[in-house]
Amino acid sequence: MEQAPVIRPLVVGDLEKIVSIEQEAHAYPWKKSIHLSCIEQGYPSLVLEQGRAIIAYVVFNYLYDECHLMNITTQPSVQGRGYASQLIQTLYEHSKLAGMKAIVLEVRESNHPALSFYTKEQFEKIGYRPNYYPKGQEREGAVVMMRSLTNHTPA
Image 1 (cartoon, rainbow, N blue to C red):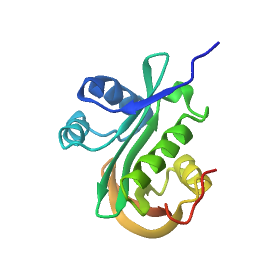
Image 2: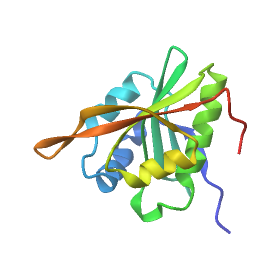
Image 3: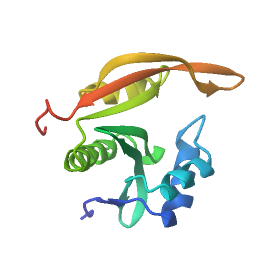
Image 4: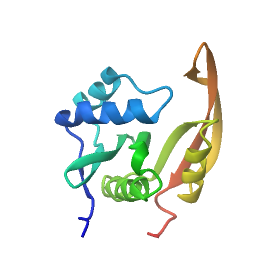
């Protein structure tokens, strides 16, 4: 019988594994230095482990009364199994306990799987940032989305 996933705080010892997942999952991955900076600055980020192996992570930070979801990624070989949903539910719980009123994020306008995921998670489009993300020699716009934490009950 397979063990239930474990969600725990992301620590510096997780850096190599999350960078590896990031590079495997994204056409334009975050650099290792960005991940390290988030860890060093104490962002209250999380990893999801299955059988003691990290298979997903979420990087976020709190600013005033908003949680900024910066990166949520699942290892490509296990995508579609609900791990991101489990992580984001834990993010909601942590954010509420920290006094946050909403979750805010930017997502590439071409990232249809992510847009669908966030819509399913009851995020609403609240804005657009043109030329926000690098895309080869060009730039790509970002959809800005928000989910209130005060108007939702647990699913």
